[in-house]
Length: 290
Image (cartoon, rainbow, N blue to C red; front, top):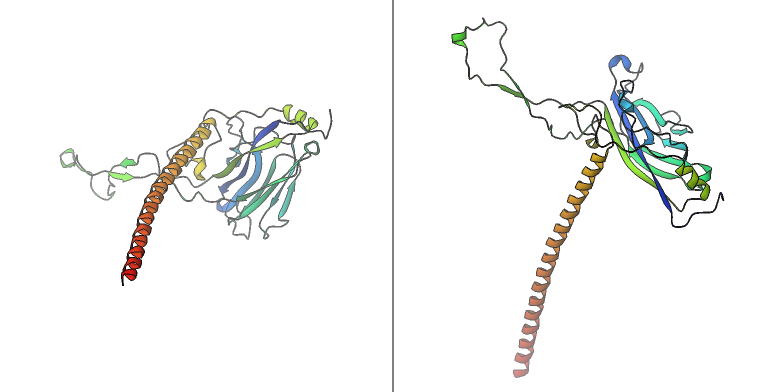
């Protein structure tokens, strides 16, 4: 087995996610003499997550089932220049950085592969997300509550009760913490070296679950909307495929509308050119008669 010889016609991919999870800090959790309001973790993880556990914190709900160090040597994170040592290098898993702050900014994530890979590093740009905005419409039906009662008023007798008193409609407010913003990516190694190919095959990525295994409530935002609870799953993959298919159909429909418009415009242009030619011929004939 050669360390540098590449296997022609072979490709191996490994799914990862990169992004961040954020939680709102209560007053007593915030650093002293600081205006920081959020604690966030940015990282590179395996796409699949371990089974749900009460011991896992809000920032650990998404991904992270597998150790990626068999093909990732290190990851660097370029934070905002206002942070001490803005270029952070993580050389062992978990490939993550946890900090506190108050603002959003772009983070450059650079992944370096193990020596056996003989591959150049790859980079991603991630916008640190602290807030779940824009908020999507609440999917759950609004709660129906009885009208407010004046505590100072004497209790009404059954004969005084109003059976048809209007009920108050209250829409549940979405949860604003935690916030998850992760991007699924498949790293494709084309024609890997024989040594690296063996390394890749020595580890099988954990398969994605069929559906989200974490609790979802009426006040929960979808993770794809930058919301609260969720994990990458086959259902999410299927939904994304359906969205792409709908977008494809929409693009084709728009192309057809534009094509028909172009045909109509070309016909109109042909007619106008004929009118111009006819006018020119008529003027030439008139000049010859004079």
